[in-house]
Length: 510
Image (cartoon, rainbow, N blue to C red; front, side, top):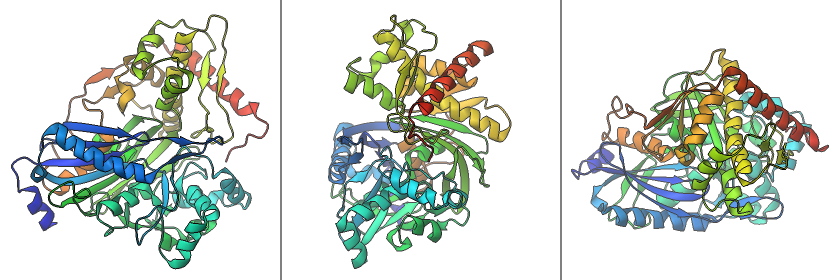
C-alpha cells in the first residue's frame, strides 16, 4: 500500500483510469481528484450470435479495444501518463472465459451472460436433485445465466480446455480475471468477491469456492482464480505499455456492484436499478444475507474485510430490446428516437411486448420461454410497438421491485437508477409511476466504472469516503399515476407473461 500511496502523490493532478468492460463495448473513463468524470472513450466489439442464439465475444478483440480505449481517452483528454495515479476495472459479470494461465491464451471465445447454451447441463444437474444445495450455498437459482454452466460447457465440449486441465494450466473465470491477468502481465490471477458471487460457485456464507457445487459442474476448485477484496491491490499495470510507468490496479467490481457502490447504496434497504443491455435491480441487505426463493442473494462487495450482501433480480433484455428495434427490425435509426415515438403513441389496451428472446430470468426462471407481442390490433403502428418495447423495460424492473417489497415487508420509496436509458424521460417517469417510488437519476451515467474507481481512489487516499458520495441527482421523477391505473396496467403485463410461459409445451423452469 505504501508504494501505491506514493505513486498517487507524484502529481498535483491525480486521475483514476477506470475500465468498464461492458457487454456492448469497452469504455475508458478518467475520474479527476474530485471524483468527477473528466473524459470517456468507447470502442464497441462484435456480438457473435449464431443460429442457436448462442452469444460470444472475441477476447482478443476485447483486449485490443481496451488498450485502444485507454489510448483514446488519454489523447482526447490531454491527460499525461504521469497524472494517472491508479486504475480500476468493472466488467460484465457472468460472461465467462476459459484460458491457459501460463500464457493467458483464451481456449475459446468468452461466453456472454445472455447465452443459454448451458441449459441442458443445468437440466441434468436439476434431475440429480441438486438445485436446493446450489441455492443454499451460492444464493443463486440454478440457471444457464450464470458462469458455472458456461464453464462446464467449455470443459465438456472444447478439447483444448481438457488438455489444459491435464497439464495443470487451466483457468476458468469471469472475464475480469483474464483482464486482470493481461493488465498485470500475468502476475495476478484474481477475482473479487462481487464477481465470484455471480459465478454460482462461491459459498456466500463461508466466502470460499464451494467444492461440492464445483464438482456438480465438473469444475476443480484449482481451476478458479484467487479471491480478493474489491478494493485490494490486484497488481500494477501500464496498460500494455500505453503509460510510461506502472500504476496500482486497486479496485475491481462487477458492473452492477460498481453502480450500487457509486450510487451510495451502502446501507441496508438502499435500492438501485442499472439500465444497460440487460438490467440488474439490487437491494443492499447489510452484513447478513437475505434469502429469497424467486430472486438471488449475492455479495455486494467485500471491502477491507467487511462484507455487504444484496438481493438481486436480473433481466436479460432491457436496453437490448431498443437495440432490437433499431438493428433487427429497423423501426428506429437510433435509441434516441424511442422516447418521442413512445410519447406520441396511442394507448392500446392489452398491448404488451414480452422480451423473452433467450428465456426469462428473475422472477420467472424459464429458459425456454420465447418472446411475443400480445394484444395488437389494426391501429398498432411503429410508435405503438416502440412504446410497448419501452414499457416492457419498466414492467420487468417493477417485477423485481415488488418481489423485494414482499421480502422486506415494506414499500420501496426511492429507486436510484443509472445507465444510458435513464436519459429517456418517458421511460423514467413511467418507471416512477409503475414502481410508485421516486426515481433519482445521477449527474453522471458511468456509475459502473465509477464504483471501482471510487474504491481505488479511497484506497489510494485520493478521495474522502465521507464526502465523495454526497452528490445531488441530475433529475428526480415522482409518481403521478393513480393506483387503479397502475394496477390495471401491471395486471395486464402479468397476464401477458403468463401467456408466454404457457405457450410452449416444452417450457419448464430451470
